[in-house]
Length: 159
Image (cartoon, rainbow, N blue to C red; front, side, top):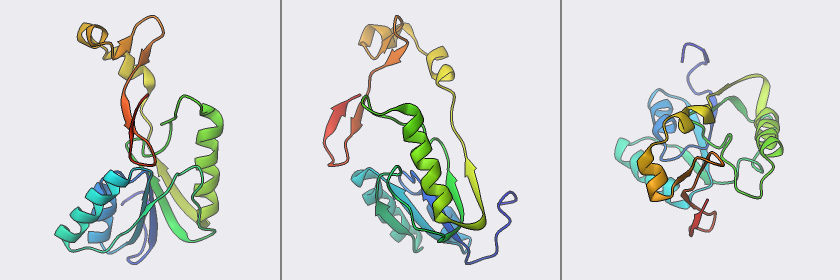
């Protein structure tokens, strides 16, 4: 909050909002928040949590590489990766993240602020264990993790 320095009622976009942790906290503090996420399941949980906390947040199922609202928001956040750097096997990693950045930029009012956090892939690889290799979830030869993710239609797919 000290970085954003926004007046109450400011409009904030939460990119890759997951289950709404940051969106809900910002709404509690008096901000008008829109959270977007590609996962229907995460958004259902976010809506449930917002109701439990008695706050109003607009949650939208959207791909961050496609979502924008021209000049609508005073600030945007993309925390704990959000949608940034989370790519599918057919995505171009540079174009994927540039699309998100372009859409966030277009969604901000002039002078709007953007706070982004992204983890280093190296930290994940450094934390790989022999158990990960034995389970087949990490290949040390290609330095690749294999996980199951939720597709936009809600189905689970290997990644």
